[in-house]
Image 1 (cartoon, rainbow, N blue to C red):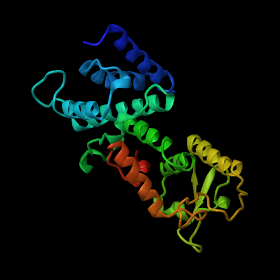
Image 2 (image 1 turned 90 degrees about the vertical axis):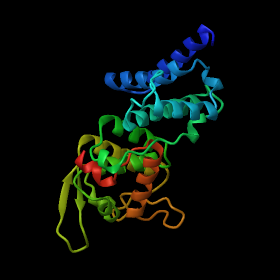
Image 3 (image 1 turned 180 degrees about the horizontal axis):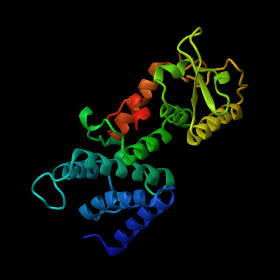
Length: 253
């Protein structure tokens, strides 16, 4: 049995984790509940949690709920709890509270496509957390924010700086197609402005014909992103979060 101060210290870290993020009250409650599954399952100190402990907890939570002899948690609940645990350990590792992130080996169960047509608020939160820990989060957050509007992922590859007037995107299928203006919401405008400012702060001179979204691949660095760029980003987020979704779902959610 672990000493009481060990358990107290674990709870303190959970509180710090929640306070370190700008979370809505309901999201804070959900995070506490998710991490409480782990706290009730074992009294081991955070610094002593290794890959074996994480693997055992994954097996446990996929089968039982606090001693129950049958599976009582849905795949979506299991995925959410494990995703919260992984975000928590990633934060503790970056904060210097643990010397390793043992949740790197954690694989989240994928939801069947039929169960993932509509993205919930929790899904969005986990997706955004995954984007913020990805390469080039400034670009990727702007991408996802823009994809919440009525345009297809492939249309992003044709956009230039001149196609954004600070409020709207001028979307074309080809050089000779008619113009279609898409008004962005305040959140997307802010993220897109932040992304463009980030590029300028890194020494880029933005010109009218510069790509609105840059590729950073070894082969196409500095050119327009391709649909493949969006597809690979979605694949990475799906693998990290366990949430089955397509880029097209953002415009319907």
